[in-house]
Each structure stands twice: as structure tokens, then as C-alpha cells.
Image 1: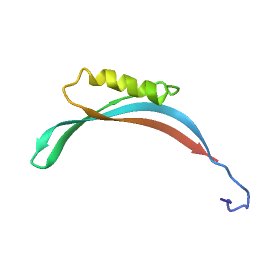
Image 2: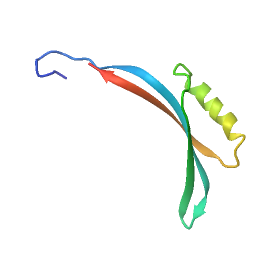
Image 3: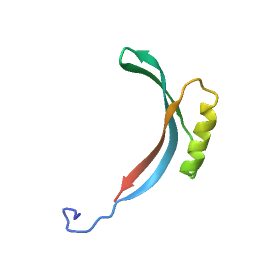
Image 4: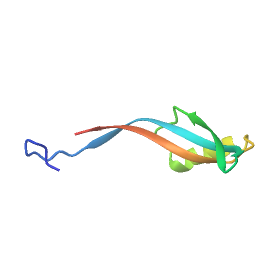
Length: 79
């Protein structure tokens, strides 16, 4: 895309932080699932997806419920 000045601007991203979020289904209320979540901040930004998921699996071994696992990368965009 071209900016108003007619110059080409390429956006770049810089990682700020990485966190891990696990969402647990702890029961049901009729047809609705009851969920709880846990977010673990300050995950090493250089950790691979496999490392993050492996850590989550180890944490899940200590829980009574299964969970979905999300990696949250916060980045700032600049032009």
C-alpha cells in the first residue's frame, strides 16, 4: 500500500512478549460448558511452538481436566 505521501511503507513487527493460555472445561450447565482459564506470562519469546506445547502438556498432567492451549504473541507494528 502507498501512504498519502506516495511512498511505499513496509510494516515490520517487533515481539514484545509471549504468554501461554489454557482453557479448561470444568463441567456443564445444561447444554453450556463451564470453562476456566489460566494464563502464564513471561514465556521465553524464542521458545518454539513445540516447546510451549510440551510445557502445556506437562502442566495438564497436574490437572483433572483437559484443556485447549493457545500461544499469545504480543508484537508492535511499525512502518
